[in-house]
Image (cartoon, rainbow, N blue to C red; front, side, top):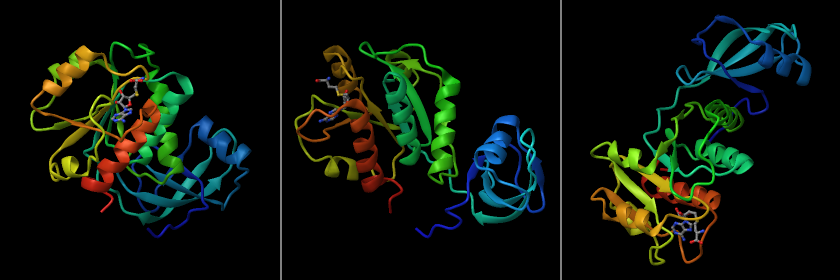
Length: 246
Ligand code: SAH
């Protein structure tokens, strides 16, 4: 995919973006641009807000407290919001940051922490997850930042599971096989993928999940993957076979 302006810093901002618009950054982003990156008046930055595509902008003031930018041109159209739902049992600290960032890079649309019996953490700092999602989008030129939902227990998740959406279950207990045929049969349907915790699903949880009419268990091969490896592996095969890697 042709990359343009790859050397320019990219920042996620809230305001609407349009030609000639001017916007003033908050303290944190101003400090980052003016002090850390030492950007000065005239230097360029790419801005995106998840709605208006990517815009090339230039500094018109470089105060460390409030950098001002003027938008020049749209350099990439807004990408469609992804319909891919990603549920996972949250891991501890930096591995949690990792799976959030990888989910963004792999193009999910919704990030849903799911508390299962063996989940290692139960209280999540939602703002930290959102910050990780935005940072991943900035670093990987993702233009639609996924929604990070507040955590749900597995029971609550299943109670409210939307009709019509298939739940692809990464099932470490499934007999090793290739998921290609199983996933190919789901082409065109709204899907979600669920990855269990480091300790795996309880047998009772697996039994409940695999009995669901809308659940489709897949194997990710003959080896037991760590939860963060399984997340990337599952998202890769889904995106490659029925997702947006077309
Ligand atoms: N510790 C457990 C495995 C948990 S791995 C054990 O030793 O049995 C964490 C999660 O990654 C699993 O719940 C599952 O969702 C996924 N996973 C890991 N390996 C997998 C595989 N080979 N096939 C399908 N899913 C897998």
